Image (cartoon, rainbow, N blue to C red):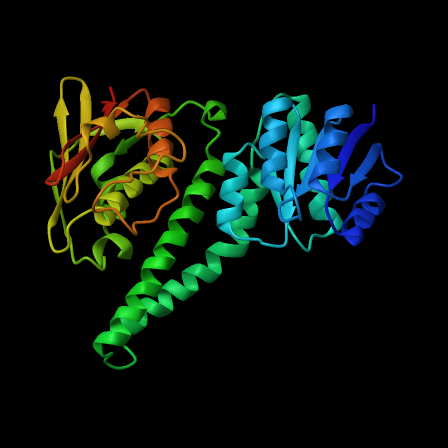
Length: 355
């Protein structure tokens, strides 16, 4: 059975390339030169996969995507664009795109994504976003880390003392690198984390030594620009049965948020204690806090972001807390937050103690 494909793009050269790439295979290919024509064909035809450009005159790709997700929710939509950045990828994925292909693309890149879409459709697997995660990992992670490292070296004065204006500029670079690394890390974590498919957790973990202290030693936590100190208050010998790789993701997200939303020069308190048959982890910062209505309004949902006085200019992926909850749920635990707005916020998670 052939796969029916529809490519929507305002560039003839792109449409010709798509026809050539999928010619001679088990595919039926149709093309459209605008969003308007593409929607008309998609509505009238029975396509398996639609691939649309994001930037087009008239109706753009995001509007095509939103319309098709509403009118034909079972239709798999992929986007490609020459405007390859994290924000356009996030926008497309938030609106239900299966995957993301940057221009210029190779025949292998495009066919790989289309095949993944077809396999996912047959298996009813939904949007895996695995190719996007590979793009983010390979094309963004290394150069952003290199810029961050260089800026941090300048900030510490290894190449000479900076004046106040230079210091301010370098701090802006570092903050923007941290923002990009947060997005990159979140998408990479999400790509690793089809949690329902993970095997049972069987490793006994001493959370303090195997997870927490390693995260506390990271430069972004230990040497943060806000000069916030991190103190650990821990009962010794507490172990859980779990995946240290995933639990490091949780602790890193919670500590990064404590720095991001904390007040400069204050202390972050990390506590580890036993209560009944559970291990209770908590991280408390002094800062803007979280209003009660926001705590109860989907704080742990995907792409949820706080928008309140005191958080202006604070950037993030909107995925961190969602990822934390998915991981803790999979471990048979629970996660919650307590806060006094304008004073402090404390995030908790509880996990069953190892037998």
